Amino acid sequence: MQFLVENLHARYAQALDADRLEDWPGFFTEKGVYRITTAENEARGLPLPVLYCEGRPMLRDRVASLRHANIYEPQRYRHIVSSVLAEKISAQRIRATANFLVVRTMENGESTLFASGRYLDLIQASKKPLFIERVVVCDSRRFDTLLAIPL
Amino acid sequence: MQHTWPAEGATRVPYWVYQDEEIYRLEQERIFRGATWSYLCLEAELPEPKSFVTTFVGDMPVVVARDAKGALHAFENRCAHRGALICMQARGKAERFNCIYHNWTYDHAGNLTSVAFRKGIAGKGGMPADAKPESQAPKQFRVSCVNGLVFGTLSQQASSIETYLGADILRRMQRVMKGPVKVLGTYTQVLPNNWKLYMDNVKDMYHASLLHLFFTRFRINRLTQKGGVFVSDDGAHHCTYTEMVEDRSDAYEKGGMRSAGGDFKLEAPEILSQVDEFGDAVSIQILSMFPGFVLHQIRNSLAARQVVPKGVGRTELHWTLFGFADDDAAMTRRRLLQANLVGPAGYISMEDGAATGFVQRGTAAAPDRASVIEMGGDAIASGDSRITETAVRGLWKAWRSHMSL
Image 1 (tube, chains in turn green, purple):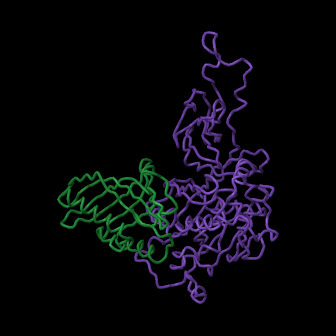
Image 2 (tube, rainbow over the protein chains, first blue to last red; image 1 turned 180 degrees about the horizontal axis):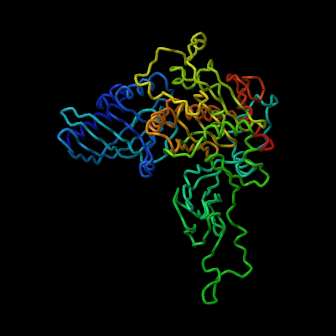
């Protein structure tokens, strides 16, 4: 199980970092939920997301908008994922947490620590596990300029 | 550094206004600490007596607090003694405020109430009887509320908040603040540019459908739709709105605009579905108050945006998204889905930080050149066209008036 979860994390991070955004919705179940929030909002019990998708159609809309509507400077992410903890909560479900760092590099070469935080995941267990829910809790309430590519 | 405004007047904005350290210093004094009103917080963030939040007015750190009787106060977050922050938490409840450095104590209005060991111990040490530590007390604000929005000014000369806003802008502000507020959450977007470039951007109706392609792709807001703008008499504040109508025209396609293209469809269009909660068929209203406050209604997404300058080339935008205490579950869900439209990851706002940052970078070597702000001529007035830069010119009219430049 630990290997399956770490492998899922690795494939997810490699897809985003290689600009394979079109693969991103495929890491979720058909009704999978993806939500980015901040540790402050979580601690205060406030529901506001920075980015929120319910189901693959909404995830695909986000990718389509990034490709065809939104304008942002060329940039790349490097995800570093660590401290993965996984716990089987039923025959079909795994609850997992992990830490992440994302370094953002702009075309002029400027690299910055763009985000740090935790993934709180509910995973559908199978040979090819999928996210039923992925909540990205950013440590900071600050976002530099814009958040285009998903975390 | 000697600066002169271009001879063209209202239709030009010279780039030194975004770059000069001395201008930044003067703005703090003449605008943020001058005869203007600044947004402080939502009343809903101070739900009970003795609750507080910390915020900023320009560079000045500020505490906003409710006293034991429920009255609102705001004061500079600076101890009279050595200038340390009096309150270091973002929010909470407190019986009183104690500076951690030497335990000088303040009440909820920011009055200095005790100085530790003021009379010394056993007749030794302490302050002279005629010492006046209160002479360096933190500054206190005049505080006024408009339907749950809390504003403050340090100026005794500033008119009431209602007069400051003017009847049109006040009415459009009250339109959004229709009941007791429920805070949904907050975050900060850091913008790589001078604070005025963000206010320029908010007041610039001309850019909305040209930069933010998501709007036009889905025909959410095209300039061919019905809408208009209110500009206050002094130019300082503005409010623009668009009515809900399906736009089936092809003005953009005929003009060959980059933002044209009607073939793009959402698979999950429910994120755009709006309930007409204000009963006037307005789908988008953007309101700005000089110097640094924006109130938006984008469909059912509502937010207060506070503009906090952090030096000549850096600005923090503090977003507080909210609904109303009587929202049902469906309305809350709608507001959370529509949160996707705004903020740093917003479908229709993520580009703003990029575009204003491009201006900061593009003008780096051109302090003596100027923006051309001539859409709609040189008028600064309300109207029913949005292909105009009237509200941008208003910003500069107000800015020059406060700055005496």
